[in-house]
Length: 190
Image 1 (cartoon, one colour):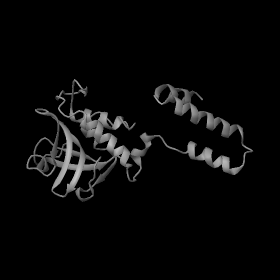
Image 2 (cartoon, one colour):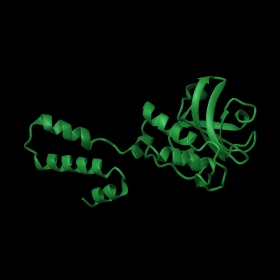
Image 3 (cartoon, helix red, strand yellow):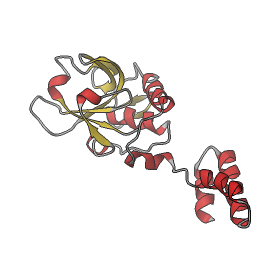
Image 4 (cartoon, helix red, strand yellow):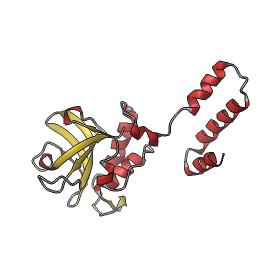
Protein backbone atom coordinates (compact mmCIF):
# COMPACT_ATOMS: atom_id res chain seq x y z
CA UNK A 1 0.00 0.00 0.00
CA UNK A 2 2.80 2.44 0.93
CA UNK A 3 4.62 1.57 -2.30
CA UNK A 4 1.54 2.43 -4.35
CA UNK A 5 1.15 5.75 -2.55
CA UNK A 6 4.83 6.63 -3.28
CA UNK A 7 4.36 5.71 -6.94
CA UNK A 8 1.16 7.73 -7.02
CA UNK A 9 2.87 10.80 -5.57
CA UNK A 10 5.93 10.51 -7.83
CA UNK A 11 3.97 10.06 -11.05
CA UNK A 12 2.24 12.91 -12.82
CA UNK A 13 -0.38 10.60 -14.27
CA UNK A 14 -2.16 10.37 -10.95
CA UNK A 15 -5.58 9.66 -12.31
CA UNK A 16 -4.40 6.64 -14.32
CA UNK A 17 -2.64 5.17 -11.32
CA UNK A 18 -5.64 5.79 -9.11
CA UNK A 19 -7.81 3.98 -11.65
CA UNK A 20 -5.39 1.03 -11.84
CA UNK A 21 -5.16 0.90 -8.05
CA UNK A 22 -8.96 0.78 -7.84
CA UNK A 23 -9.13 -2.02 -10.40
CA UNK A 24 -6.45 -3.99 -8.54
CA UNK A 25 -8.21 -3.55 -5.20
CA UNK A 26 -11.51 -4.62 -6.72
CA UNK A 27 -9.84 -7.68 -8.30
CA UNK A 28 -8.24 -8.73 -5.01
CA UNK A 29 -11.45 -8.17 -3.05
CA UNK A 30 -13.48 -10.23 -5.54
CA UNK A 31 -11.54 -13.49 -5.64
CA UNK A 32 -14.72 -15.41 -6.37
CA UNK A 33 -15.26 -13.44 -9.61
CA UNK A 34 -15.48 -15.35 -12.83
CA UNK A 35 -12.29 -16.02 -14.78
CA UNK A 36 -13.12 -13.42 -17.46
CA UNK A 37 -12.97 -10.63 -14.86
CA UNK A 38 -9.65 -11.97 -13.54
CA UNK A 39 -8.19 -11.82 -17.05
CA UNK A 40 -8.90 -8.08 -17.21
CA UNK A 41 -7.24 -7.56 -13.82
CA UNK A 42 -4.25 -9.67 -14.90
CA UNK A 43 -3.77 -7.51 -17.99
CA UNK A 44 -3.51 -4.42 -15.82
CA UNK A 45 -1.49 -5.93 -12.98
CA UNK A 46 1.16 -7.61 -15.15
CA UNK A 47 2.05 -4.48 -17.09
CA UNK A 48 5.66 -3.60 -16.26
CA UNK A 49 6.81 -0.03 -15.72
CA UNK A 50 8.69 1.37 -18.71
CA UNK A 51 11.87 1.51 -16.66
CA UNK A 52 12.04 -2.30 -16.70
CA UNK A 53 11.76 -2.43 -20.51
CA UNK A 54 15.46 -1.54 -20.71
CA UNK A 55 16.28 -5.15 -19.85
CA UNK A 56 13.97 -6.65 -22.46
CA UNK A 57 14.79 -7.17 -26.10
CA UNK A 58 11.82 -6.26 -28.25
CA UNK A 59 10.79 -4.00 -31.06
CA UNK A 60 10.28 -0.45 -29.88
CA UNK A 61 6.94 1.17 -30.44
CA UNK A 62 7.05 3.80 -33.16
CA UNK A 63 5.44 6.24 -30.74
CA UNK A 64 8.25 5.83 -28.20
CA UNK A 65 10.96 6.29 -30.82
CA UNK A 66 9.19 9.29 -32.33
CA UNK A 67 8.75 10.88 -28.90
CA UNK A 68 12.43 10.43 -27.97
CA UNK A 69 13.52 11.97 -31.29
CA UNK A 70 10.97 14.78 -31.04
CA UNK A 71 12.24 15.72 -27.58
CA UNK A 72 15.87 15.58 -28.70
CA UNK A 73 15.18 17.68 -31.82
CA UNK A 74 13.41 20.30 -29.71
CA UNK A 75 16.86 21.07 -28.27
CA UNK A 76 18.54 21.72 -31.66
CA UNK A 77 20.50 24.95 -31.36
CA UNK A 78 20.73 24.77 -27.56
CA UNK A 79 24.25 25.65 -26.46
CA UNK A 80 26.63 23.19 -24.87
CA UNK A 81 27.16 23.29 -21.13
CA UNK A 82 29.11 20.61 -19.29
CA UNK A 83 26.76 18.92 -16.83
CA UNK A 84 23.78 20.84 -18.25
CA UNK A 85 20.37 19.22 -18.46
CA UNK A 86 18.04 22.01 -19.59
CA UNK A 87 17.43 24.60 -22.30
CA UNK A 88 20.02 26.95 -20.81
CA UNK A 89 22.63 24.42 -21.97
CA UNK A 90 23.35 20.72 -21.90
CA UNK A 91 25.96 18.13 -22.69
CA UNK A 92 25.65 14.99 -24.82
CA UNK A 93 24.61 12.60 -22.06
CA UNK A 94 22.23 15.22 -20.65
CA UNK A 95 20.46 15.40 -24.03
CA UNK A 96 20.11 11.60 -24.13
CA UNK A 97 18.96 11.41 -20.52
CA UNK A 98 16.29 14.12 -21.00
CA UNK A 99 15.05 12.62 -24.27
CA UNK A 100 14.50 9.17 -22.77
CA UNK A 101 13.11 10.60 -19.55
CA UNK A 102 10.28 11.95 -21.72
CA UNK A 103 9.08 8.36 -22.22
CA UNK A 104 9.73 7.50 -18.58
CA UNK A 105 13.00 5.64 -19.08
CA UNK A 106 15.65 6.67 -16.58
CA UNK A 107 19.15 6.50 -18.01
CA UNK A 108 22.39 7.10 -16.12
CA UNK A 109 23.89 10.59 -16.20
CA UNK A 110 27.11 10.08 -18.18
CA UNK A 111 27.87 8.51 -21.56
CA UNK A 112 30.11 5.75 -20.17
CA UNK A 113 27.33 4.54 -17.86
CA UNK A 114 24.69 4.97 -20.59
CA UNK A 115 26.74 2.66 -22.84
CA UNK A 116 26.11 -0.19 -20.39
CA UNK A 117 22.31 0.04 -20.67
CA UNK A 118 20.40 -1.89 -23.30
CA UNK A 119 21.57 -4.38 -25.90
CA UNK A 120 24.65 -3.93 -28.08
CA UNK A 121 23.76 -3.95 -31.78
CA UNK A 122 25.71 -4.00 -35.02
CA UNK A 123 25.69 -1.10 -37.47
CA UNK A 124 23.76 -3.15 -40.03
CA UNK A 125 20.87 -3.46 -37.53
CA UNK A 126 20.84 0.18 -36.42
CA UNK A 127 17.54 2.07 -36.35
CA UNK A 128 16.05 5.32 -35.12
CA UNK A 129 16.14 5.67 -31.35
CA UNK A 130 19.34 3.66 -30.91
CA UNK A 131 22.28 5.17 -29.04
CA UNK A 132 25.71 5.73 -30.61
CA UNK A 133 28.86 5.96 -28.49
CA UNK A 134 32.16 7.59 -29.38
CA UNK A 135 35.67 8.15 -28.04
CA UNK A 136 37.41 11.51 -28.05
CA UNK A 137 40.08 10.43 -30.56
CA UNK A 138 40.59 7.81 -33.26
CA UNK A 139 41.99 4.61 -31.77
CA UNK A 140 40.85 5.35 -28.23
CA UNK A 141 38.45 2.92 -26.57
CA UNK A 142 37.15 5.05 -23.69
CA UNK A 143 33.60 6.30 -24.30
CA UNK A 144 33.28 10.05 -23.93
CA UNK A 145 30.37 11.00 -26.21
CA UNK A 146 26.85 9.80 -27.06
CA UNK A 147 24.12 10.58 -29.56
CA UNK A 148 20.68 9.31 -30.62
CA UNK A 149 20.00 7.91 -34.09
CA UNK A 150 17.26 10.02 -35.70
CA UNK A 151 17.07 8.50 -39.18
CA UNK A 152 18.60 5.66 -41.18
CA UNK A 153 18.36 6.33 -44.91
CA UNK A 154 20.90 3.72 -45.96
CA UNK A 155 24.23 2.30 -44.78
CA UNK A 156 26.08 5.49 -45.73
CA UNK A 157 23.55 7.94 -44.31
CA UNK A 158 22.80 7.42 -40.61
CA UNK A 159 21.73 10.67 -38.96
CA UNK A 160 22.12 11.20 -35.25
CA UNK A 161 21.53 14.05 -32.83
CA UNK A 162 24.02 15.03 -30.15
CA UNK A 163 25.37 17.97 -28.18
CA UNK A 164 28.76 19.23 -29.42
CA UNK A 165 31.04 21.55 -27.48
CA UNK A 166 31.31 24.07 -30.33
CA UNK A 167 27.89 24.02 -32.02
CA UNK A 168 25.59 22.80 -29.25
CA UNK A 169 22.83 20.38 -30.22
CA UNK A 170 23.05 19.39 -33.89
CA UNK A 171 22.37 16.49 -36.26
CA UNK A 172 25.21 14.86 -38.17
CA UNK A 173 25.90 11.79 -40.30
CA UNK A 174 27.57 8.94 -38.40
CA UNK A 175 29.37 7.89 -41.58
CA UNK A 176 31.17 11.24 -41.92
CA UNK A 177 34.96 11.52 -41.75
CA UNK A 178 34.61 13.21 -38.37
CA UNK A 179 32.39 10.74 -36.50
CA UNK A 180 32.87 7.29 -38.00
CA UNK A 181 36.58 7.05 -37.06
CA UNK A 182 35.76 7.68 -33.37
CA UNK A 183 32.62 5.50 -33.28
CA UNK A 184 32.87 2.72 -30.68
CA UNK A 185 29.49 1.00 -30.41
CA UNK A 186 25.70 1.21 -30.68
CA UNK A 187 23.07 0.06 -28.20
CA UNK A 188 19.31 -0.35 -28.22
CA UNK A 189 17.47 0.78 -25.11
CA UNK A 190 13.92 0.49 -26.49
